[in-house]
Image 1 (cartoon, rainbow, N blue to C red):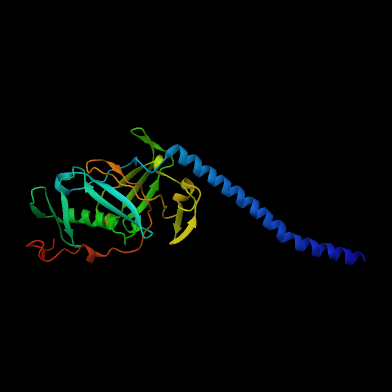
Image 2 (image 1 turned 90 degrees about the vertical axis):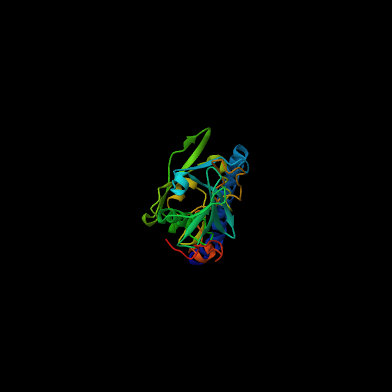
Length: 260
């Protein structure tokens, strides 16, 4: 009799255990979801991150056109990848073409000249960073997130220091991303580990562990003289640089067949 009663109670416990487990999981999930929702709402209400964009890039040093600084102008998501375009700080020079080996530009007066090998290497680096089919891990050997915020102007910013690979011969790129430009919605904040997307809830604790972050949708600046950046959308993109897309038309320049 005792054995039968014990057995029945044991079966009852076995039957109840999965239900209790599900209840605990549901309560934990609900608490986590509520916490994230409150965090998102609090940050959204205090930052209103859509406009204006408050982030900056510094130390993007170039040898182009007498050492004028090139700023990263537009960083946006397209098809799950990123694209970054660059511009000169004075807005007066336009890069005409870059075919992977040769690069040239045309100034405001229509004058054209080939860029030197050093200048072309810089443009190759810029193209590698900008290419939506490229991967930032192929441009930067290290991306360092500062643990402490820094104040730039009136903005409290997160500092990202990106170290290019030595073969590009470029200075580090330092981003100051305004805290107002972060919108950590759980569905948008994704970290990548070996190309696997994982949900992420902590910017600071996860950034150094994983290869990238996904941030809010596109914004951009309107004046070429402005140092203001678009938001960083992601530091994780696809794999390779396709030089063919940079190939100029054969009749673009009389020296278009030359290489540096």
